[in-house]
Length: 148
Image: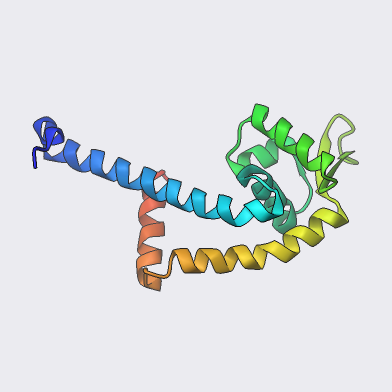
């Protein structure tokens, strides 16, 4: 096999292989979650917002952007669509009247409470080829790679 990456040096070849492996892994997990969410008519971003609100409580939009790794433009659309489905509502913060907060509605709470355990089962099956120690090592390495 002719490996053109090797022409850039062994370290660069390895870096390229790692980049491709990380991208494939991320895409694979995204597809799994998208397929899981399809029957519930939710996108990954919508699920991320609902999960964050379910586990962390009401949040400002900027907090949701940070917690879900979204962009502000995308978050506006996500929240608008969740509001249209009556899964979330917006209200003025009691601490700062200039700030809106996002909260799950009862309908949103009921849905995320129903599907989150199913999502955990789906993830369990996705990671079943790894031992717990390997999961911990992978997590440590990914955090190190991300500077955390």
